[in-house]
Length: 114
Image (cartoon, rainbow, N blue to C red; front, top):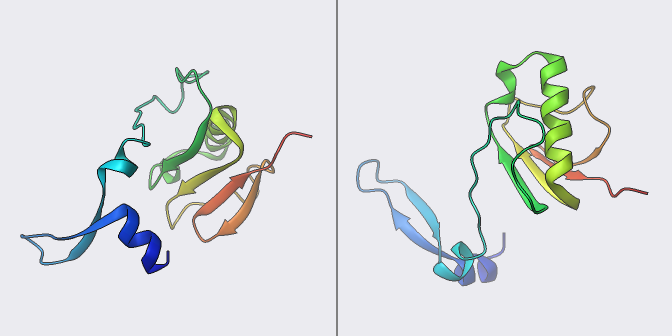
């Protein structure tokens, strides 16, 4: 992310315990974010509107391949066309789902329905 966007939407924060520099979302960005908890195995998810992005990091690795496939199908159902799915560094959709385009190490984009 370039500095212009970073400064527009985030504020620097130094963790007092660890001394690490982090960034926190400014209120105008937080107002656009909707955090939801859901049972990954529940079908369908109780989310009435389509989402722009789903973060599911470092959880999928604990499920077997058929269950991972079902979870990614559930994400597909709640994501908008071209919506983003962010997963953990040790997780992948390769060999599990063809419904997403690989954009980067942990970022996938839902392919539009044709």
